[in-house]
Length: 467
Ligand code: SAH
Ligand code: SF4
Ligand code: F3S
Image (cartoon, rainbow, N blue to C red):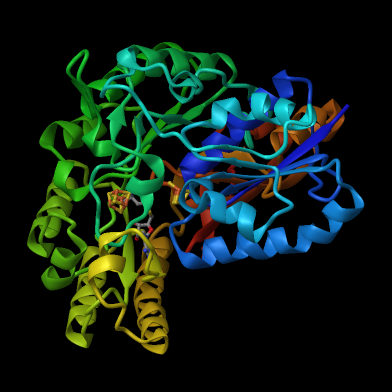
């Protein structure tokens, strides 16, 4: 039996795509192996968001050249966003590659692998075509792919992503996503709900609805916005073991009152928002074409805190974007200081070929300055995260237990009954998405537990269950 392995980098979209590809290959009779070396078929599910992510893939491919000479029957593939962006360049720089498949065609991977096995040579599929703006008019295999969910293909059997939107239409000037994932398109509500029910039947306790601008979700066939979709998923949670509903990533321009009210009123929807600000300077936001001012962003935060006072908010920032002055950067520092994000993901600007920033703006902030700004902003955020974490000391929080720090779905299935009650170090998350580490038996995995916090660090809380 042939084995396969998928190396995954990038965002939740890629994690989900790798799960779907794993499921489709298992259905075709291929066997999963955790060993990159031993796999007969090795796929890299890639990300193009920053140069560094691409460089790492090219060097990994470089290291495989000799292996391929010794074992020519091995199949190597690059799938996902970098496949879309680099296309034929991949074959040129890594002639030992067999397969290049963009995010719109991943459903075809088993078929393309069969072609390679039949001696038809290297295969490349990159179409992002979707006919029309709604899934009803659509024929592309990608669009019908998400329904084929398999528990064994997931990293954790109790948690799953559900894609509710494809692509992105925002075209922020720095960002490659609209070019590699295609136009924004919301899925049909009934199909999303069918997928959620399927996942709950498979034992899922937490569902995270994902989209690049998830708060903009709008199903035109039924006139359903994200708040309406959340109500419908909540209705599923009321009658099933589904415990938690989350959604990422929100856009500041679509945080409407109905969405905030839904998070406040629906008990299974967790009080957590990821709303990237990217910068605290209006001049920079304008060059990024984010479509809002920092004043507007502050209003959004104020509205959330008024409607959902216990909500945790996280953000993304890019430092060293084209033309960012020290004063611009200090405005970002001020925004982080006053916003009290649970966490901020901070990135140094990386110019991406094909984007407007690459074509029209100058990457004029020197690397050492980008690095310093990155570290400075990180230090501010860490201090805030640490203070906010410390406020949890002595508090009791409800945790959805996810497993040991390394548990995989396949391992959970293999653990014998007597081992299930041995105490191990478990991890899980609070409703507001804080990671908690505590001791308990494996039997707790997939259940809700009340844990009292006894120790804290900026990004992890430690606790115990009162007996
Ligand atoms: N759809 C989400 C984010 C997608 S990419 C949103 O709109 O916020 C995740 C993060 O990567 C972005 O929020 C941004 O902070 C960062 N990013 C995107 N392009 C980048 C680039 N060219 N250089 C550095 N960071 C980038
Ligand atoms: Fe990229 Fe902007 Fe779309 Fe987010 S909203 S994926 S940053 S273009
Ligand atoms: Fe990367 Fe593609 Fe996601 S570029 S961030 S994997 S959509």
